[in-house]
Amino acid sequence: MAGSKIFTRRRDGRVEVRMNDYGRSVVRSAFANVLAAERDPDHEWHVSLTGPIDPSLDQDNPVAMLARQTETSTNAELASLTVDEQFLNDAEAWVWLTTLQVALRSTAQTNGLLTDELLAEADEQMLSYVRTIQSLLFDLAACF
Amino acid sequence: MASTQPLRRTTTEGDVQTEDAVETKKPWNVIVWNDPVTPMAVVVVIFRKIFGYSNNKCTQLMLAVHHEGRALVWSGHRERAESYCVKLQVSGLQSTIEQDA
Image (cartoon, rainbow over all chains, first blue to last red; front, side, top):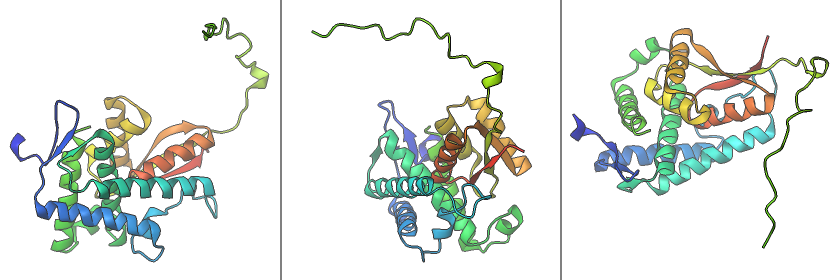
């Protein structure tokens, strides 16, 4: 049903966000956690944001690592700054998508949801959270 | 007023390397790994945005990741492979680079 879409690409190119307070609180929390995890080595999501680029090396190229850190932070900052907006431009909608995707994969990795079988065995609260983020991502991806 | 100089080169002669001069370094591959939570549509959109591939090619690559657990999505010089890998990671996909065997 077209009317039930949370994200809609308008004729003027902007992406309209039709999200209730609960939805906003979910994405606000996801964006804030990505930002915090990038800055705090003790954050439970930090490891998932710093995976190897070239696993054959003991340490990755510092320039590439810095680029990843900077870009992830910049995306999460812009996403956080626009979390209450009703309309997003293309760049803002893109950082919403990438930051939500980072949050989803970090959640899965942190909770050991690494296979379909393990995901199926997750508790109901975790499954509900994963499905909510997946649903938002699916809807947002249709705008690109 | 500044004079307008032609911007286009008149020839590309000399740009083509001879067989002897071609380097035989093995290319670097960008690999994307499967995970059980990322929606397929998101993978397609990210591939299209980062590599500019057609929708068909992005879908084929996404299906390869899904069914085979991993897919080679780009191959070439190390620096560019590293840069693409970072862009994929920043977009939330699990990606690594490896030199061609």
